[in-house]
Length: 281
Image (cartoon, rainbow, N blue to C red; front, side):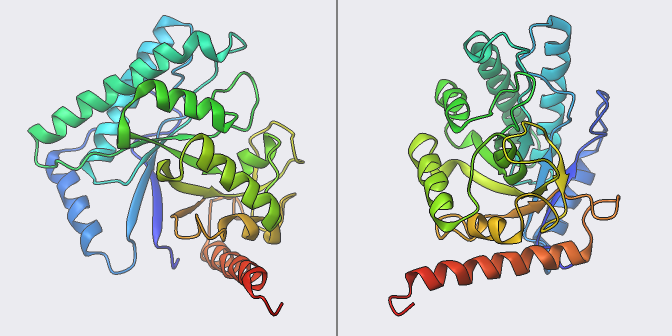
C-alpha cells in the first residue's frame, strides 16, 4: 500500500474477550517491526466498548480489564501508542468521572509496565487519549477536557493525545485554512502541550461542521476537503507526526490510493505553507 505507519486492533474492537498471544509472538512482532524496510511505527487502537467514565460498576470493571489487556499487547509488540476513546459520562459531567478515569489509566499503566519489565520488553507504550466528536456526553470533546485528565494523572510520557481531524471538525473546531490551523495548533500547544501529541487520525467528514457525530469519509470527499486537511496536517509544528487513515475506502478500509492521496494532501499543504513564508509571494 505504500504505508509507513499502521494501526491495528489487538482483539475484536467490539467484543470484551481479549486475544491471547504468547511472549514469542509478541517478541517476533517487535523484531519484524525493527527489520521492516518501510513500516517505521505501529499504533494500536483500544476496543470501542471501553468506557472509563461510566457510572455502572460492572461496565467500568470490564472496561478497566479490557484496557489493561489491550495495553499489555500494545506494549508487547512495541507499539508507539495505544489510542483510546475515553468514554461517556452520559450527562453526569466531567468533574464527576475524572477521578475514576485517572485511576483506571494509572492502574493499567502501572500493571502493564511491571509485567513488561518482568518479561523481555522494557519499552513502555503510552496511552493516547483521542479527542471526541462531541456526542452523548463523550469525554475529550475539547483540548481542555483532555488536559484536565492528563494533568490529574500526572503520568508524564505515559499518557498523550491522538487528534482525529473528523472528530475535531464535528466538535466545532475549524482548521481548514493556515490561519485557522495556526490557531488550533497554538491552542493545543498552550492547553495540552505539543510534546503530548503522538499521532493524527487523518479523516474527512461525512457530516457538516459542528454536527457532533463520528462519521468518517474518504479524503477529499467530505465536508472538510483536501485543502482544509492539508492546511492542518502540514502545519510546520505537526507535519512530521505519524498520520493514520481511518477512512472507508470502498467499504473495506483504506486502499493504496488512499495512502497516496494522503501523501498528496500533505505535500500540497506543505506548498501552501511554504508560499506563506516566502516574502516574494
